[in-house]
Length: 235
Image (cartoon, rainbow, N blue to C red):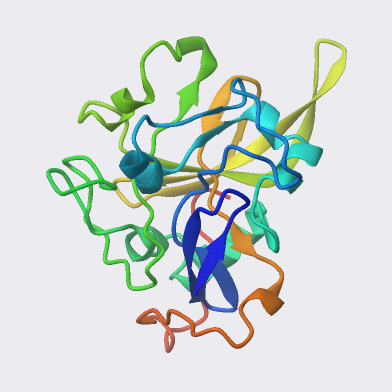
């Protein structure tokens, strides 16, 4: 099935366990209420092909409580850390999930892809995680296209909706947690980013009425009969 955002961009959907995930990163530049996202709050590749391959990169400011509620298509949301953990748990736990969720393209394949040196994913769940890199506004002096160079970090990043507050300079500062899937199949969910970070968003469907009566994309669930899964490194 297909989910559309307010601009008409289409995203395939796949069921993994009991969750429904979009298989491409969000690439919308308009909030769901019709207001434009500030040009300071997201960055995008110049060509449609690259935008579709890697999505837009959203700034920390776009992850405020009000803004991030209006970013995803109707019936979807920015996933929480717990929802990502459920995904990793179903895909084999932290010792196996990365290779199960990573896309199979690697340089010099077409985009999206991982850089040379990455462990090739098997992707049985059709989640299609690929290297994205992270932008920091303090060093955002080159076009976004520079992030696909072979020299750029070989890591997939996703924002989450999970936050924590830290006491800093007499103020409580809110940080958003993000997910990392490394090229060597290590997964981390314990990192936080504040002002200056730009990362992609991979949405999850929360309104299951959207998919009722639709033909689902059924992945090859190679782990359906495994023992109960466990949580490992990164917690």
